Amino acid sequence: MQKILIVGGGYAGFYTALKLEKLLRAGEAEVTLVDPLPYMIYQPFLPEVVAGSIEARHTVVSHRRHLKTSKIINGKMIQIDHANKIAFLDVPGLGEIKQSYDQIVLTAGAVSRTFPIPGVADNAIGLKTVEEAIEIRNRILGNFDIAANMPAGPSRDRLLTFVVVGGGFAGIEVFAEMRNLASYLIRYYPGISFADVKFHLIEAMGRIMPEVSQKTSEWVLSDLDRRGGKVHLNTQLVSALNGVLELSTGEKFESNVIVWTAGVMASPFMKNTDLPLDERGRVPALPTLQIAKDGVALADAWTAGDVSAVPDLTGGGVGGFCVPNAQHAVRQGKLLAANLVANLRGEGIKEYKHKNLGAVAGLGLYNGVFQSGNIVLKGVLAWSAHRVYHGLAIPTFERKWRVIVGWGSSFLFKRDIVSISATKDPRLAFETWASRPKA
Ligand SMILES: Cc1cc2nc3c(=O)[nH]c(=O)nc-3n(C[C@H](O)[C@H](O)[C@H](O)COP(=O)(O)OP(=O)(O)OC[C@H]3O[C@@H](n4cnc5c(N)ncnc54)[C@H](O)[C@@H]3O)c2cc1C
Image (cartoon, rainbow, N blue to C red; front, side, top):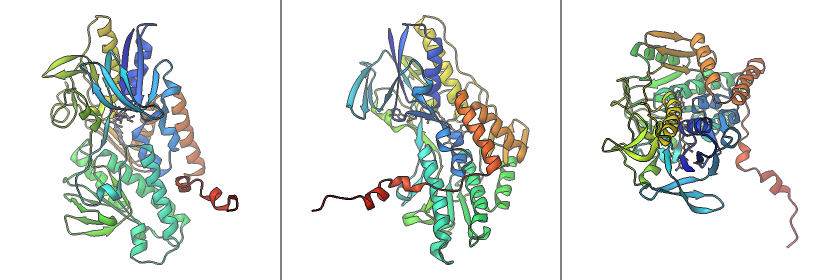
């Protein structure tokens, strides 16, 4: 019985495990998936979690519930010795353990990529996890509550100023959703006007959303401008010390909500393996999704998703490689599973080739943008396409149902506007009044 170890249960890892469960015959192989999280995160929904259009729990897919025969280990890979086929895992409750394997699948994804700008590490927040999305939402709502009590002035301005760094897809989506949430909130805060709330997006390049054409990206810019979202192009963040943002243009403003979406980098854990890495820390792959060493397949080692550098055989991609997105991660995961099984059976394996289907972004309620080749949709049509596409794409029927029913409830009753931020200190109320033995 072959032992297959999957490191990372996000898009690529989850779909690899799901497909392996379908393809493997009884007794053929044992699949183990290791991930510190008990779920895969449907990251395209994070901006809508921030906006309150999707309940946070509905955007994650439980490994244990939906992977029926795989063994799940909630822990993280800290080292791999592929020469001896041993993975070292850090497992809560057990400490460091060794896990032997016959086949390794590396699908550990990516983390937010930052630059050494003063104050960013201490004051900004990423948008890769559901916890980050919840925190951004709680901060916006909490800031409105505090600002409503305060007179106009710099302290109140700071609470009502929101910043996103990075004008890629994720950055623009979350910026638009945050703006949309703030515009909605104003009706419940009579002392706060539309003009009091400031939104800044900082982008180092001369344009936003490289996934769509220049013309479409210009439409998004003017739409954001109309809705009260200021985009600073050709501008770098110079400092964010103590929440005081200084831009390369000399502009300065303060904020305690600084969302960092300026790119991703392959999971840094990959450095602790004896497997090859490219200059960007990605695991090099052949189009067959086998890990490549000097252009030759390494035995029994596979990779897919954001952690990997998979050649883009369509001729698109950046630098000849598939861009890090879910479209690729899902399809690569499925093909990886099929190739791994075929390889075990001594059958032929296939090369990964997927032509980009286009891009669809939600830009707040009833607004969006879609582009596939020369076909462009804007506004409510694109927003509907976004909902249909992602409503159907989130894995498992059970999750689709929860998300779609949630959208229906929000349509009827509008979105929730409370932050349950007290969960950070849940024992406070009990502890304050709890009787203690007399000294
Ligand atoms: C806000 C946002 C919006 C997006 N929208 C879109 C979109 O509309 N369309 C699109 O195509 N793409 C979108 N993407 C990109 C897409 O979500 C990613 O490309 C995709 O998640 C990559 O899948 P993955 O499996 O490689 O990594 P992930 O899904 O990130 O999964 C990696 C997994 O590995 C685990 N892991 C990490 N380190 C270890 C370790 N040491 N040991 C064990 N496990 C580990 C992590 O916990 C995680 O579960 C979006 C991303 C974001 C952040």
